[in-house]
Amino acid sequence: MSERILITGGLGQLGSELAVALRERYGEDSTIVTDLREPANDLPGPFYQLDARDGTRLHEIVRKERITRIYHLAALLSAVAEARPHDAWSINMDGLVAVLEVAREVGASVFTPSSIGAFGPQTPKDFTPQDTIQRPTSMYGVTKVAGELLCDYYAFKYGVDTRGVRFPGIISNVTPPGGGTTDYAVDIYYAAVRDRRYTCFLQGDTYLDMIYMPDAIKAAIDLMEADPARLRHRNAFNVTAMSFSPEEQAAYIRRYIPEFEIYYDVDPVRQAIANSWPNALEDYAARVEWGWQPAYDLDSMTADMLKTLTERQATGAL
Ligand code: SER
Image (cartoon, rainbow, N blue to C red; front, side, top):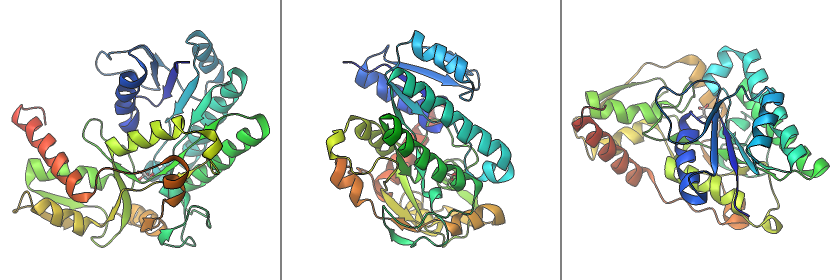
C-alpha cells in the first residue's frame, strides 16, 4: 500500500526538506504539510494550518486525507524551551498526545524525533550507549524523555507503530533551525560565506554530535521503512554522523576559506545545555537493527555547505 503521510511542524528546518524527499519517494500527492504558521510563499503541495495540539482538527485532516503515517516534527527546540518552559511542555507534550491518539484511532504509524537532549550530566559523555542513564536537566530534554516513554507506551499498550531517533544537531541550508543549542553549527557556514568571520555562542572546545540534512532525512525514512521484526528498540535510536567542536569546525572551514576567523561570545544558557549533553554518541543499535549508515562526515559536509551557499550568494539569494 502506498503511504499517505502527514507532517506536523512541516515548515521547520527538517520538515521543509523531508516533505520534498517524501514526495519524491512516495509520489507528489503522498505528503500533506501542516504547520502552526502560514507559509510565506506558495508551497508546491497540500498544506493545512494546524496547531498539533488541536486533536479535533488533526483528526479531521487525518481522516479526510486518509493518512497512514505521521511525522510529528512540531516542537520547541532547547534554548527556546529553556526560556519558555511551560510553553515547551504544552507544545512538545500535548502535541504528541494528540498525534498518538489520532494514530491509535486510525492505525497510522508515527515518527517522533527525540534528541541528544534526552541525555543529561550523569549520562556517559563519550560513546554514549543506546540504553543508558537519561536524566536531562533542560526542559527540552524532559519533554524528549517523556516523549520517548509515551511513544513506547502507545506501542506496547495499543500496538501503535511508533518509532524515533535521537537526532544530533542537524546542519542544513534550506530552512534555518530556530532556537536550538546546535544552531551555531549551521550559522557558522552562512557567516563564513557572507562575512569571513563568525562569533560563536558556545566555547570553542564544546563537542557535540551533528548530522547533515541528507543523512537526517535518510534516517527518518529508513527507520519508518525498516522491518518491524528486526527492531528491538523503538523510541528512540541513537544516530550520529560526526562529533566536533566549534574550533574544529572552523579549522575545516579554513581548508576552503583560509581567511575565516572565529570569535567567541559565550551564552551561559546554551553553554550549560551543551555541557549537559554527550560529546559523542554510539549508534550501534541503529546500525544493526535497521542498517543506519551516514554518508557525510565533517569534511564532506563542509565542502557541500560552502559550495551550496557560495553558489546561492552568487545569485544574490544569500
Ligand atoms: N538541535 C537541537 C537543539 O539544539 C538538539 O536536538 O535544541
